[in-house]
Length: 78
Image (cartoon, rainbow, N blue to C red; front, side, top):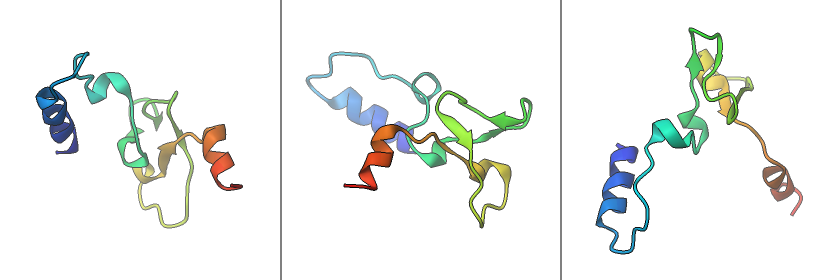
């Protein structure tokens, strides 16, 4: 639903200079977009997501999270 909303918002924007990039091509933007790829036995989108278990995760897909960047780490110190 979120993807459809983003595409509609992009399509009605009068100054859109580029075509809408679908989720399949742009990669995940948040933890909920990361998921477990059972065929490869790892998190899908390995360049963006990593397996990081946190107590309370019930299934493997919940343990796939966005990789931490140095910018994210700096936010904890500011």
